[in-house]
Image 1 (tube, rainbow, N blue to C red):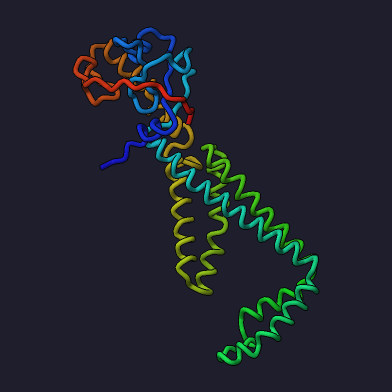
Image 2: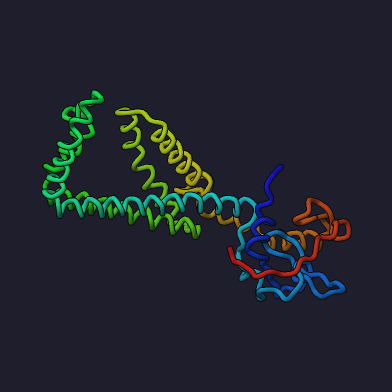
Length: 286
């Protein structure tokens, strides 16, 4: 059973109605009932009781995401949350490196003291701290120059900024953010593949798979870099799903004498089952 993204979104965020100036199209989007005039929601298509949220020429009507566009927006926002969370974690890592660089000697002394305390316990359980890869890696960081650590902290902060900006842009469905997501994610794929050759883990495999799928989904689905007709084809497909565009085309077909059901799969207005009339909740433009 397919998920009705449109009605679910309207149920949580509210309907969007619009009264176009064009008389024929205006009549297709409204109906008169015993309780008052109702207007078609531009997202889910249901009739909504009350005054429309806006009016004007049809070409100025809000382009409300619906159908596949609404599903795509949900997926992009999932990726946006992941990017922002990653950015926050990297900012914390950059702050930790910066703090460490300013108190490197003190941290070294504290680490050596703790190592001396835990060495007998580790030896009792047969664990050699002096030859531990983890301990060796930590000890190597104490030999890094302060300037080197500052560069590392700056690099981490720059990466966190890119991830955060990318996440915010994806949340609002900006096309530049989609380009940034593809370029930035693809640039790090070779590094992730190299890390897998060094040491395999389920987390690394899952992260690599998620990033590959995200790149392909955005690249192909959003028609970036001229794929599948590019931006013009993407905009045409998005506007072609607009309820106003659908009803305008249906009205033109009816005028020409061609049977058209607009949004309802071939039935004319007389043959359509009556849509439910809903009390209008507060509207949301997304």
